[in-house]
Image (cartoon, rainbow, N blue to C red; front, side, top):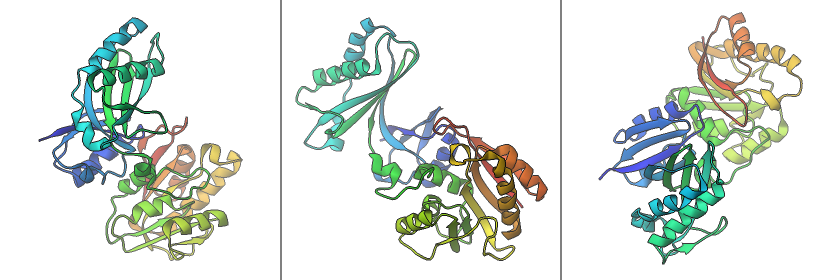
Length: 337
């Protein structure tokens, strides 16, 4: 039996997630794509879907329905929720069926997201009076109610924070979420023959995501000693990373198949005037070290600087996709030798 699911993802990475899904769980059928959301159906157990490393969270999709924008419409919302058969959630929450509803709201409404969540919880209580109402800190079932205008989506979260953060790890300032790091790795089309390098590795998140897939050799480095220590702790390997200057890599010419990196940009940098020189140094060095036909997958908001640096090195530069990240609009670029 096919069940409906919803996967959330950083806006801009929807197609990366869909591509990952086609490769890892080809039995799944994509139903709809929205900003930051991919709806699909699958007959596979939840464990199979946990392979989707680009997804931030996985949800069991329950229903999409209409709800009015005024407070007088909240009783209708409550009634709608009370009519759903949520018995499947018992296998998720176990014997302690304590629940909360987290609501988000976009558009013009005369009620708050908290009032919408409260109405939804009253609806659950009407249908399942034996279930326990939880709170933000203590619950086993987390329902999600997304309101956009008069459209509402109701779902049950199947993953917790450890899914997208990969458990406990050390992060340095400006570190990527593992899900975004994985998207960069996936865009590089990882092959078991790859010699893979992250020249600005920070706490090693991209390297850690690349190590999920077979490779020939993997290396990373950073100018910050603190970042190197953090990366070694996360990777549990002292040999993968080393302290280096990304403009003077201790690697032979034509040695690397794939570079993947989160380049400094936006609030990560103090003086933008110096960044153009640094980009030219880094791209020139990547060009030297890349094999013919090799690629660099790079995340940055400084596309103009990157493109000019690539032109000077006779590298083909193209924008793959643009993201929304903490108020910034970086893009994923591909440089090809």
